[in-house]
Amino acid sequence: MSSGAEPAWEASGGGWSRRRLVAALGAAAAMATVPAPVAPRPGPSAAGPGPRTGSPTAPQPGPTTAPQADPTASPSGGSGPRPLLLGTYTSAEGGGKGIGVASYDPTTGHLTGTGTITGVGDPSYLALHPNGRTLYAVDEREKGAVTAVRLSPDSSGGKVLGSRGTGGSGPCHLSVHPGGRWLLSANYGSGSVAVHPIEASGALGERTALVRHSSPAPGPGQEGPHAHQFVTGPDGGHVLAVDLGTDTVYTYRLDLSEGTLTEVSQAHTRPGAGPRHLTFHPGGRFAYLANEVDNTVGVCAYDPATGRLTPGDPQSTGTGGGTSYPAQILVTSDGSFAYLANRGHNSLTRYAVEAGGARLRLLDTVPVGGDFPRHIAFSPDGALLFAANQRSGTVTVFHVDRGSGELRRAGEPFASPVAVCALPL
Image 1 (cartoon, one colour):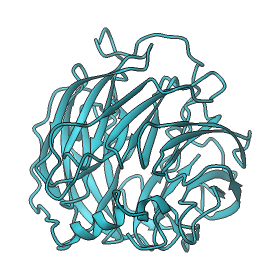
Image 2 (tube, rainbow, N blue to C red):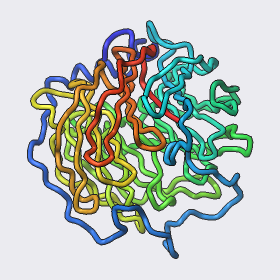
Image 3 (spheres, rainbow, N blue to C red):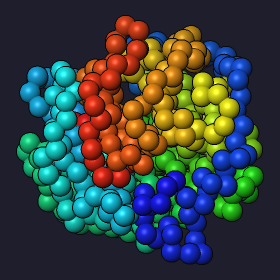
Image 4 (cartoon, rainbow, N blue to C red):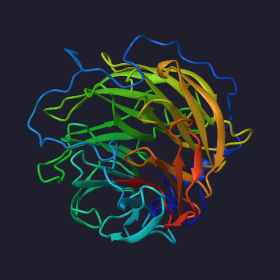
């Protein structure tokens, strides 16, 4: 990564550095060119998962604030301006002053800056509570933390409710369990994952779990584990941690009463793949894994009953030779198309999703109109796609054609200091 786009702790000597990691990987990355899909499994249709009936991994009951519809997965319900929250590095040269706040027109995609939520250090990744009232941010620093922010009714500002330590360094991802009671976070620098309880107010309680990935051994070119993502499986009872350093996706059972973790399985990619980001098909039986180091994606089979993930063969990103550092992969709500952000190639790859989720077919790549697309996200209605471009400090907006999945840029990119996360509400 370029200078001026990293938190200060990464350049402080002696410790892990993403900049050094990316430079070291550039000459060694390889790319698979022939897709080899996982065999289809019987399960819910592409229209979405069916009701859970007696599954041993169904979420455990417990007291919680009843969540409203997730604003990141439901229609916006109006044509007026919508909020967009932006993550950045506050300690980087030219970085932001906190969590950026903008608004977007859901019809045109036009962006307008409206302010900043201050008081959060290096908020490089953001996640919203299911009830839409509280925002959570990582503090991606050597002494990692996660911060809760109570949003104003129109999401134009917010009040910091407090922070809790993650027990590790460089947290780079977090997510809220769908039940709304637990916050999951991944510490990249120390290769560990953590769980925090969420109180009725939205504030965070003391950490209930911390697990470091001690096995298997680090992959080629890696000095240790690097947890890059921590998310809930479609069944709700399992949570999955993607670790770039160990070339492994770990599945844990989350105790929904105590917030503790029990490992139940490991899914291993090929050595040196460097898995970074996982997203599930809405049918719940397949997932797509972006591999940062070897510049590939993979279709994975998922068993909701056991939480076991089975990676398929690596597939092309369509970016040609060289290394494009795939960052994130998304799938449309109807399960028809998937999109991959390629940072080195500065493009978005479009795939058709086939065979009920079991196969990705490469369609094309589209220039992102910025430099180093770190994060991509759909608007709540799926009509727009936002790309946060770290090195150019911009956010690009695309119209998404529902029938073909084609992307059409919505005007010029929007300037946002060291943009590393875009969360449209």
